[in-house]
Image (cartoon, rainbow, N blue to C red; front, side, top):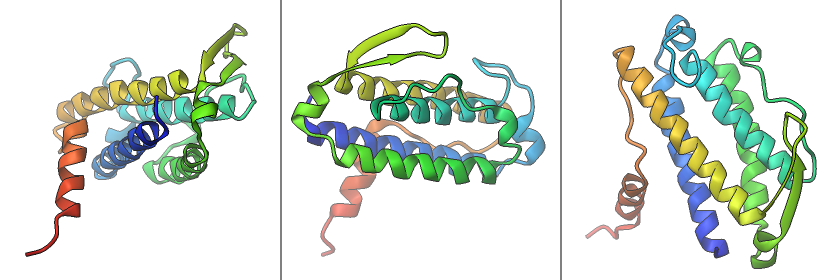
Length: 171
C-alpha cells in the first residue's frame, strides 16, 4: 500500500462522513434517535458506532487499547456528535498525514474490547476502518430513506467526480 493511496482513501472517508453528517443534520431529534433497527437501533447509534470505531482504531495505532466503545447516550443530539467527530477527524488527519512507507508496513498488536489480542500491519487496519465506515454509511442511507429523509451519494467515484470538477480550469 502506497502512502498516497492511504491518504487519498482517508480524504474520501472524511468527505463521505461529512456528506452523511450533513444529511443527518436535517433530521429532528426524534428521527435521529428513532428506533428503526439495522445493525444498530437508530441513525444516532449507527453514527456513534462509526465514530467509535474510527476513534478506537486511531487509539490503537497510537499504542493504546481502549476497553470500550463510545456510548450513544453521550450524544443526545447531532451537534454533540458532530463536535466529537471533528476532534477525532482532526487527530486522524494528523496521524494519516504522518504515515510513511515504513509505518504502513509496521505490525501493531492491540487488545480488543473483549480482551483478545490481535496483530496486523498498519495499512491493513487503516484500510479496514474505511471499509467498515463505508458499510455502516450504507445502512444510514437505508435508515434515512425509511424516515423519508434526503440522502447523499457517498460512492467513491462520486468523490472523484466532484474532485475532478473542482480541479477543472475555468475557460
